[in-house]
Length: 251
Image (cartoon, rainbow, N blue to C red; front, top):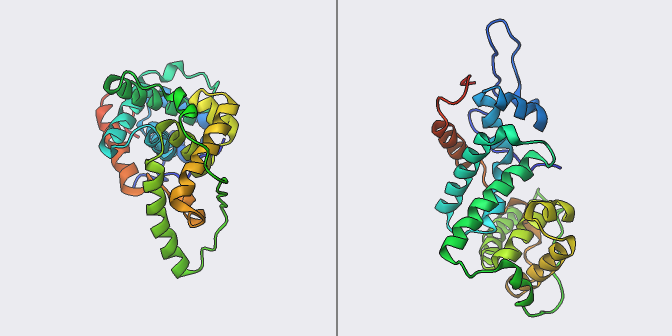
């Protein structure tokens, strides 16, 4: 499984200098299993790298279920704290990102259930009428034209508003498949859905968006719903502060 772009801030690319006389560790170069081993060893730098690696995907997953930005970040924080507390139970049966996102989704859905106990996300598949042809969303765009870049930025905002209006069940599938770039199988695994359900929800999400976007949305998808830079850095450091004193090493 590939990850989306990692967040970038002052800690990115740093290394753990190791214990006295030990070799430095480049956490960014570690794979999931190696990174988890370092977290279990109590290295804060390893858990920082986990968050930097997974923040973008987790944000997009939770954004599929929730609308409020403050609540989304709160859910992400809680998910990371719970993941740290359960890290010894992670068995690499799924990717690290999938495992973390499931924890975050469970937290998000639990909040929704407390507010709207009668909501059944599975029934949404039957509630949306059929509408016209499906929009195709090509991913390859010309990055060299400034005017086109400005148009893409404007379209990104239009697209985000349109996607935000989708029913949560469709929005989650759309963000994972079209924005995050997950395969149908990855999306089904992450959302605990049948593959056919993922295909149906994506198909209907595209049809709903056709009313708002027509052919103008093609160039904006890769940059929608970003969770990079200062937002990624702020959440990462906030979680580490909440876990202060629980690592054997601050690096």
